[in-house]
Amino acid sequence: MSGHHDVHSGVHSEHGASAGEHSGRARNPVVKVLDLAWLEFEKPDLDRAEAFAHAFGFATALRTADGLQLRGTDPGSPCVLIRRAARSRFVGPAFRAADAADLRRLAEATGARPVPLPEALGGLTVDLADPSRLRVRVVAGTHELASLPAQQPHLFNFGHDLVRANATQRPPRAPARVQRLGHVVFQTTRYRETLDWYLRNLGLIVSDFLYYPGQRERGPVMSFIRCDRGAVPADHHTLALTLGPSNRYVHSAYQVADLDALAAGGEYLREQGYRRSWGIGRHIQGSQIFDYWRDPDGFMVEHFSDGDMFDCTLEPGWAPMSASGLAQWGPPATKDFLGLEPGVESLRELRAIVGALRRDNEFDLRRLRGLLKVANS
Image (cartoon, rainbow, N blue to C red; front, side):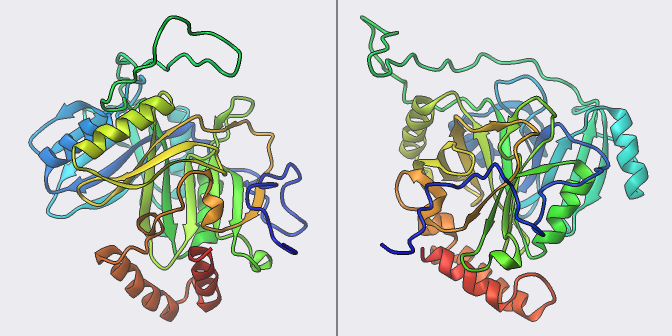
């Protein structure tokens, strides 16, 4: 078909931005964080939250009357902290600084001050607010949890390369054991301002930009952002930001051993009565094999495996955004994943669109047209 753009090719450019476009990194960031440490939520029913967490593949690191800490099998911090509250709410992320000196440098640059974290976590935090008014913690010196027994990946016979003989493959239909927290995705009405805030203050760098078809000259509307560890490869994205009519959590992602763990774990979740949002498939940006679920409080969470790892030398890729461009293979993106499923969430987003168009922010009428075009692509 003449003029058709193949969303499955040419999506990462080694040449980076064109003249005048965003470079995808700050020249002199205040600090360079190493990774996500954890995510914090509030939920009214900790028993219900813990039951889903165990079915999803977390282990409980700590349970009190008013709090829950969930962890993966990797050593380090808990992945998720949940505090009992009257309503469900995403509180914010915590990023790990290299050391206390970086924490002090960040505090001096922002006018914040390091304060002690609860004894169960240890260490210090500098609490900031990004331009979307999301609380962002940067932590150092926290307690390190020892590793737990990990789910072992399977041996595969690839083509004629025989590594398994006289043995069957029988992945158990059991929870996929979460290894670690991989990334979190936010939507913001002030995308460019928020993006620059993370690059400037936390030293993150962009792996891929997406723009609305026909609107590249207006700049990107989504970015997949990784930690800058120099020559040490980091996850393709630790944070992803997307422009939209409201400031909100979109989803978070947790690594598991392999496709069998992800698929068999998904069958276990389905049998327990939990709701898949979208999957199983393989993404384009990041290349992860993915499977998305909704927890009982409506938060979207992802199992992933086999994601891209980039060092600091790769420049950002640029690609048009489309629903069909979200995956290389797998079922079409669902209405639930795209936020189009009729219900409370889609009604809330519709109201947010009306409000956003009345306010001074980056989500204007032309951006709305671009978003609707993406949703129907």
